[in-house]
Length: 375
Image (cartoon, rainbow, N blue to C red; front, side, top):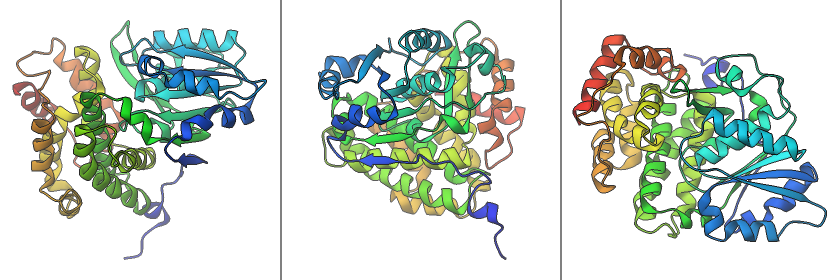
């Protein structure tokens, strides 16, 4: 049977226009940023400053370039964080926004670039208001191998007042430049390597099995599954290991794949559960992943065998073993959900759940929640 064009590539293919992958490449960041304008903001986390890496980046600033650092206070990104960052960027008359950090930092920087000249408040876009294209460049430098945010047009944020965690997106949010520097993973503590890596593995698996998958995304996603599976444990054992390059590449490829195929029920569950129980996104994904693989197994055909071949083990057993290897214990076990019906509705309303390979009903979400909260 001949394939239609949209089974080969998605109806709208979205990619970062330029990616640099080289150890030490972060030293080029401000030289590259200077081509986007003379004034910009660097969004970063605490570890970049405490490690001395931020100081080194700023020391390499070209003459005439004005840079304002903005430090994320930590935790999952919220609308409050975005509002504070936007005030800084607007007061500084920023012409570009760079994010050097994990997924939270990248999502905040991406949102700030996307909404720098927006007419409405961030909460309005979080609630579904139409987004106008941005001309403000976003530059992404991931310091974890996890979210793949450097390769997506998606911003995932939590409204701290309502507790609702969800995403919004626009093609113009794509990073103009991505720098993949595996040296930066060396500053990550092993628990961060583990939770971020489980997030990346989840995204690779979900984009590979998504109903939106195409020939294009399948190749990227399956390669990402393999790269992450074979390199995550060595980097967990030693963040400065040579395998960090391949792990970072796997995370990036998973980001490109999910940006063009969407995800699945793990992310449909992880957002409302993470917001309510204040659980880091990677940890929520890690705990939910084996249950989702088991739930979807009968709906993905020979893709299950291909993933198992890629990881060198039965993929369900492999996902469970990783939890033991990384000493990941469920933060949900034994707890109860006060607003279970609302969590079910949010899970079913998620675009990620809509892309799941097996159609998900309210009863299915109930079943998955029972499994997840049983431990």
